[in-house]
Length: 439
Ligand code: ASP
Image (tube, rainbow, N blue to C red):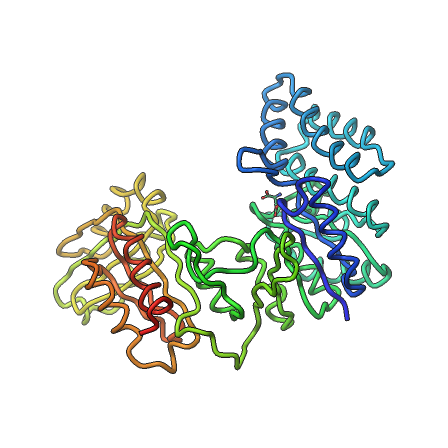
């Protein structure tokens, strides 16, 4: 058995946290491959090292004195090193970093040093081999992750290594320049490593005991999710549920490697299992609720729309031409509505309307703003009658007007559009009906 363990930034923010991580790793000899993030926040007011690096590099890029900022970053690592009583000096590493900042080595290079340095400390602390991701994780010329090349090189490299630390978040472009994934991307690295070593489990250690059914900022003490499928998770994270980077699902999904989200501060908790499929019923009809605010709906009307072949294509063309991706397209007999992100759309609004008139020649176009979308997700919905009915009666009961309904044909989720102002009330009502009262 082999396990890949990824530790998030808050799990490695201080020497104390490093000690907890080591204890977890040493408690199970199968935990052979470790993927660390950069040190995160030690408390609510603290700054993540990644953000300190971005800020420091910005100063360097302007040609201003960035040394005090770099010194503060170095101090974060030195505090960890001395707290762990290690005999390790990062002086020469910081000399190199300083030189590269002066040479303007790039924003991605700057950010990646957070993981790189934490990886050096972790490898030293565990006595594991350090593997620099710049040598084994690759992106193409356009900055897209090169899965095939990475898997070939990484699996060969790790085959020869009994136990290794592979820092998260970055790799390299074909010309050797360091390139990062998007924020939170160490989750993706963990998944790539799990695939390369054909791991039995990918453990993702963070600061919560897995996923919660709903956002704790909206629902007080929501219940946790024991098991969730990749597809359910994809729906929920797309809709804004945090904790795990949504791209991190893809590498392990095809290989059928389960992901276990665990809490570094409560290792005895089972956390959440993310699996391909399961016969395990979720405790409730729904597995989770997530949502996002800030959408616009563009309602397009045209008589006899249903008979006009190609109308939908022309409408979507107007959005494509202006570089806007759409989220949902509910339609009626003579109407079609396009949901888009308000902040993306707002600057291009009149251009899109112009294109729509030109391409599709509609009778009217009406724009509604400040809308929220809520996804109610659950593999159990398929086998249960009346889920939609229950959602809508719960919403009617708390006076929330439903502006849009979209149920995917997989019956895995129901998406509901409401006004931004009704967002929290709607989520509470749905949570109440399915989890609290279990009606
Ligand atoms: N350190 C990076 C970030 O803050 C990547 C990660 O932690 O996953 O986004």
